Every structure is written in C-alpha cells, then in structure tokens.
Length: 171
Image (cartoon, rainbow, N blue to C red; front, side, top):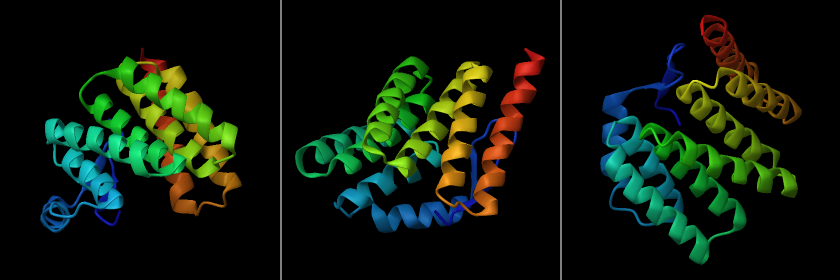
C-alpha cells in the first residue's frame, strides 16, 4: 500500500500518511468487493478504529468462506489475526496465524506464508516472545529471498529481526 511511509523501529507498526489513508477510506467504504473489504480492514486498523476493523475483518472471513478461494480465505484470516493482535488478543492471533502458516506451507504458497510469518512475528513481538518473533522474521526473510524480493523489502525484514534481537537482549 502506498500509504506506508515507514515502520516504527521499536513497535514495528506502520507509519502512514494519515490524510491519504483517511481519503482512501472514504473511497473504499461504499465498495462491497472482497478486495475492498480487505483494504477497508487495513485502513481502519492503521487509523486506530480497531473495533470497526474487527467487524469488517469478521465479515471478510465469512465472505471468503462462502465465495472466495482458499488463498482469499487465508488473506482474510491473516488480516483478522492482525486485528486481534491490535486488540491484545495475542494467543488468538498467534493460533490463527499458525494455522494459516501451516496451510500456506502445505500448499507451497510462499508469499502467503511469508505474510503470515511476518504477522505472527509481530504478534509474538507485542506479546513479549522476542525469540519466537525473531524466528518468524528469519523465516519470512528466507521466504522473501526465495521469492526474489527487492532490497527494500529485505531490509525491512532485517529491521524486524534486529528489533527482536534488541528486545531479547534487554529482557
């Protein structure tokens, strides 16, 4: 998404162009397509409206179950888990992400697996499991390298690994 200006090196949260995100939210809100629903979840989440984001995420999961592909369902579940993470429901988020990782890796869907590892790493990081977070970020790095990610993406994952190592050594 073009609204991300960077990531906070301590919290690992997105730093976004809030005005741009708000403007996009107004464009996307009336749309009912599955991709629009996923985008709406993310837009609401980064603006801090996690209750509304959770409601839309739950709807997106139901929509994907009824009429989407297995990949659609995994994407919806990953976003749903990221909302649970934001709400502090770390165990629930980690469990859902672990299930997504298992399915994605079983199907050979490396891009989805990398995304789920990234979110599980952030969930573990927020929950204080810095070793687990580091492990997830390292797996994400490996997968992204295999997929031929650009240097900017790889550097971002390295930043996550370094943050987990810093936190792990402090606690």
